[in-house]
Image (cartoon, rainbow, N blue to C red):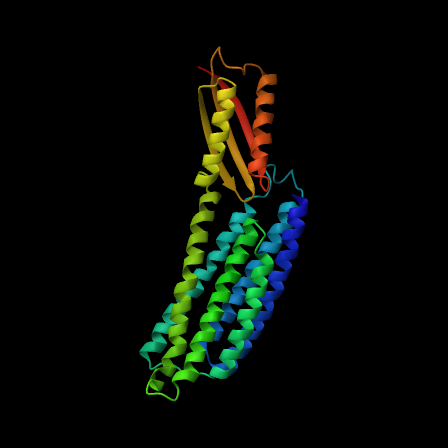
Length: 296
């Protein structure tokens, strides 16, 4: 787990530096180009910078031991950080309002040369960082990956939109040029708004300790069923939740005289076998298993 956290930290440093670069360049070039699409991309990078820094801090906090203050670990920091990522939702809403207002007020004149150049630079840079993050499976990195993937898509949209300006400016459709930038902002806002909504919903479930995902539930239920068949346990009460990189399992087996688990020693043997099996399926997660018996 320490190795994983060290690797996650290195990747988060790359993501933080990338966010800093694109936030500064995006805001600076917005001043020159007058493009709200460039501004949106720059502000998105500003929020990404804050989020990447927070994720880096969270990664550091999780791996730093502090059993006295956090007896059950600091895994709650991870979903809390990801919920904070949903602040992008506010940016999306503001961008939709801004673009609608610009469309209703005859659009805006922009410097398409600068906008197109920034779009190419952003597309290549964001795409490269996404590829660097691609193979890591950490929940923190998943959020970063999603941000960079969406930023790459928005940058590609920016390239296509500004390229259209050069295509139509000598045609009868040149009247549409002032509307291209706000239309691009509107489209980008729609694309970006789904990510924070999804992240907010999924991670809020973890914060309030709702049931783990269907995939986690199914795998663990199947494992327990197989083990209980082996030990002649006909009934069990199984509760599972996931918080960050920790899976909490509360298992109460209901036993009778035919069950092969009656003593504390047998219970420990059963528990160790369960842990060994689920470690293979969830090797990137920490596990907390409480196992108790109840006579039928």
